[in-house]
Image (cartoon, helix red, strand yellow):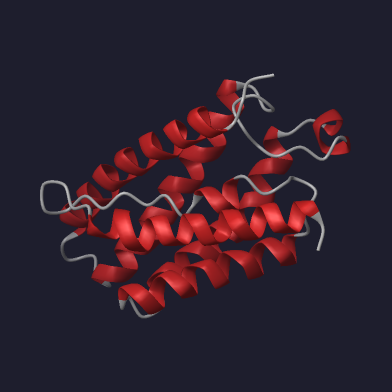
Length: 169
């Protein structure tokens, strides 16, 4: 097994366990649940194929669904960001970046591009997740406030994770 595959397999397991054992049990103000497992899809190398990203995103969401009893909500939201990821990377990544097979981080993309990438995908994930959960627009503003609060908490944790575990150039 190659070093790269082992690295991402370990990352998959650690982030899934962190989400299931720690962050699923963190509830702030009764509605805020931070989601760190999104980091796995965000930080996969840019050169990975779209199909592989979609499959990995769905599998991770499916595992979270199984242990959280959420019946496909995380699978759908993860598959959605797995679909959006290559689109945003095509917009934000230069041709030079694509040729060197980088992982998207603060230190490989510039801070502005990385922030746009992460914030857009986290917001998209949360929008799909919470509107599928409510499955109605009757309480639009309540659901949207949950999206915003969870988006802020998840984005902060994802940025901290990246800053703590990935070294600057």
